[in-house]
Length: 243
Figure 1 (tube, rainbow, N blue to C red):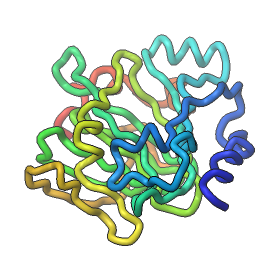
Figure 2 (cartoon, rainbow, N blue to C red):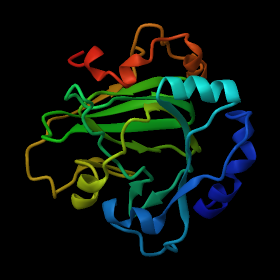
Figure 3 (cartoon, helix red, strand yellow):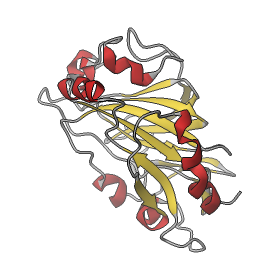
């Protein structure tokens, strides 16, 4: 199945991941992503959708109230498999600003289906790490890290996230540098982005241990909003800084 057919058919299976009302998603198209790709693909129509973002979801009015009181947002992102100019399909990439404590906001992801690589990097490139995660596994975007999510497989990647509503994501540096510090290439693995002149230590790891007490791989990320785990660190990153 080609990228266009996969993109058009993904909504048929969304009821596997979401039982509530599903709003129209925000889209990232080939044209939207051209400025952050290793080599823009001129063969695809710029209007072709690459991935879908269902933002600010809630199953019920009570859940909406719980999320609002915690200043949190629950999203689902769907990334059909594709290769563009030799590079695996990915999200655009962004950083989070600092909280009032002077520490950047974190974000919590869970892979619902498929395989994901999360490319995390500090702005000063003192640490760049690619985290591999499978269905059911959680990945924490630590304070101070930018991140790109990549679908390196042949299945549709579906992932959910919980994040603070107190900030707006910052995309400018990824746009300026034409993507993250490394590109996930189909044939050559991880390739350094030559626009980053500084030496970048690079490491790979699996999702390993779940990120916070009360959160375990395999749990339902949506169930966390009801109080089964302490999510205050998403608005108060000083609670986990330096871990």
